[in-house]
Amino acid sequence: MSVIKHVAIIMDGNGRWAKRRVRPRIWGHVRGSSVVSDIVRSADDLGLRALTMYAFSTENWSRPLEEVSTLFRLLRKFIIKEKSRILENNIKFRVIGELQSLPPETVDLINDIETLTSKATGLNLTFAFNYGGRAEILRAVNTFQITNPERLMTEADLNELMYRPETGDVDLMIRTGGEQRISNFLLWQMAYAEMYFTPTKWPDFTSREFCKIIEHVSCRERRFGSVCGQEALNASVERAETNKSAFFQGVVL
Image 1 (cartoon, rainbow, N blue to C red):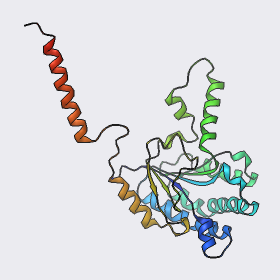
Image 2 (cartoon, rainbow, N blue to C red; image 1 turned 90 degrees about the vertical axis):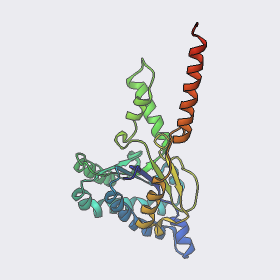
Image 3 (tube, one colour; image 1 turned 120 degrees about the vertical axis):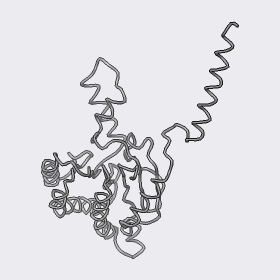
C-alpha cells in the first residue's frame, strides 16, 4: 500500500502550452481544465486521503482580466459538471482561500456543494482558489490571538486553524510545467513533503503519469528529519556502548 496519502498539485504550464500552439493563454486553461476530472478520478481510485489542487493564487490577480475571468468560469463549470460524480463517489469537496473576493454566484455554488458533501467520508478534494500560503498562516495566527490572548500558540493550535486541518500534512507535491518552486502553496503543510517537478505541461498531464509519479515517490525513504534504518541501528549500538562504558566507570569495584 502506498505511503502517499495527501497529494498537492500545482497545475502549471497552461499558458506556455497554448503559446507554443499559437493560441491565446485562455485556450490553455480551457484545455487544462479537462485534465482535472481525470486526475481526481485517479486519486479516488488510488485510495488517496486527500488531493489539493492549486487553481488560482492571490498573486494571479495581476494577470489580464480576461484570463482571470476565464479561471472563474472554469471553476464554476467544474462544480456544475462534476457535482453528481462528487456526490456519487462520497467525495468531500472544499475550496480554500479568500473567497470573499469571488463573484457571489460562484460563492453560492461553492457553499452549496460544500454543504452537500460535508458528511462525505471519501477523498478530501480541495481547490485552492484565490489562495496564498502566507495569508493562510497569518489568518490562523490572527484568529488565535483574538480568541486566546492569554496564552502562547502551539503547533497543534496552528494545525487546527488551517483552512482544512483534516487533510493533514502533504506527502507529495507535484508541479507540472517544468518550474521548480512551490509558489506560496501550502507552506505549513509541506514541511516534509516529497517534491516532484515534471516538465509535462498541465494540459498534457495524464492519469498514467500521475500514477507513475506516486509509485516512484512511494519507493523513497521518508525520514522526517531522522536517519535511515542502518544509520539508526549503528547510532543505537554506539549509544549503548557509550552508556555501558559510562556505567562501569562509575561503579566502585
